Length: 119
Length: 110
Image 1: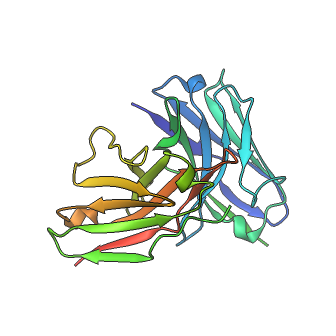
Image 2: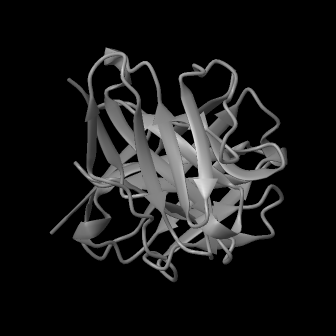
Image 3: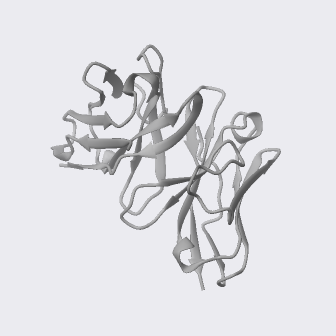
């Protein structure tokens, strides 16, 4: 079955950087677009970024453009999110998610990894 | 990239039907048939309930249905059950090739 497992979260100081990873299994990793979505404590879902199946196309929400970078390594079945210049408002549960086959819509989600940005 | 607008809360009694709206613009909901709905129980990851405006993934109850008119999409839950109590989010593809979520709706089963 499809599995997406995020890792790399933790407590980080304001202004520092952090890299999240998401390992995929149970599907042909290199055939699907992948997303990062976050959810601040007690708040709603916020879409952040998407990367195409081959990594050639990347799109970002305005709130993270220029600070966050999405990437993938299809040889390792792993998605990444490099986060820099972290702010308190970046504190959230970060989910990775995959697209449907040939549709720009999310179907499966991971369980998330928590990032806490503290001064 | 403003969030799509959903009512903060909707409630209904068991067995009743409720409808959650999701209002965007012609650059997202109104421009594409790539609108999805997700259910999220507390402490859990979101679960896909509707994709492509009105399609149900395998395993999702036919009590859940979706539709769209203009810039507004809707999710209807019929025959409301206690386990339907959760947060619901819509999501749409946009002209910028990005995605946008709705503000979220808390469904309460009275």
